[in-house]
Amino acid sequence: MITTHWRPEKYVSICSDNLVALKALKAVRTTSLVVHQCKKALSDISTRHAVGLYWVPGHAGIRGNEIAHGFARGGSALRFLGPKPALGVSRRDLEKRVGHWLVNQHGAQWRGLGDTQRQAREFISGPSLGTRAKFFTFNRTQSRVVTGLLTGHNTLRRHLCLLGLLDSHLCRKCGVRKETSAHILYECEALASLKHAYLGFFLLEPEDIKSLGLGAIWNYSKVTGLP
Ligand SMILES: [Zn+2]
Image (cartoon, rainbow, N blue to C red; front, side, top):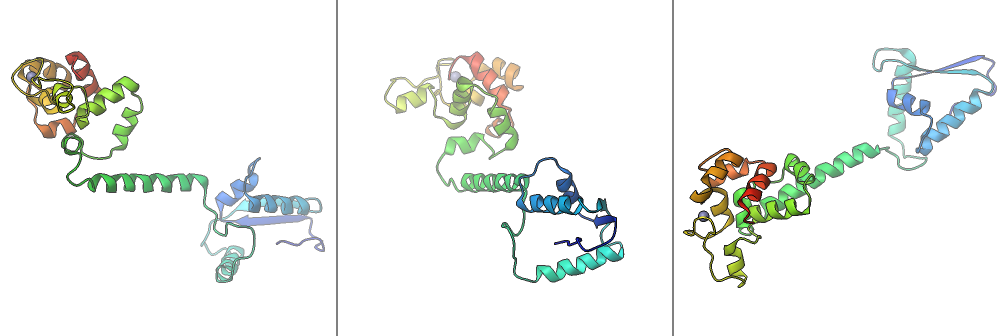
């Protein structure tokens, strides 16, 4: 802590290479106890001295700065005394780290699905921040339809037959094949012109579905009137 009460100097200049700390001291509001204590100390000093805070480049051979670094190195080797946390971490940094952790966890869970969720893994390449952002713009109906189409949990005939709710699982458009997500998205010949108009292709492969945008899938499924 700086003590100046016995000093005769009129001016006190404090030089630091820490721009973040200087900005924190300059801010009108603070939520940090350490910053608050520093501001109070500076306020006390300024009742007897004209106080100035200055930024100087670090590790540039400035004598006072080098001495301060020496003290800091020595201090870091000692046991911490003062308000916690000893190592300040910004809220933004914490949010960023939690976000990264969530993305990693999501990826690990996706890769660990094993033999389950076969339909979803066939059409979805994996967790994607872009896809998530698009998904959050959807309303409930859009979310339900697109999710159902990509995961197989939908109201297409094949799924309803499996649930015992329908007798026929044949496609309502062509009447030839089982009405499944795969059939609707890339097999059904009766939907070829709609596939071309809304998905950009007359013929698609399962791998092509992974690169389609959710908006295109929603628009296509809407005009088919199926899911
Ligand atoms: Zn069909």
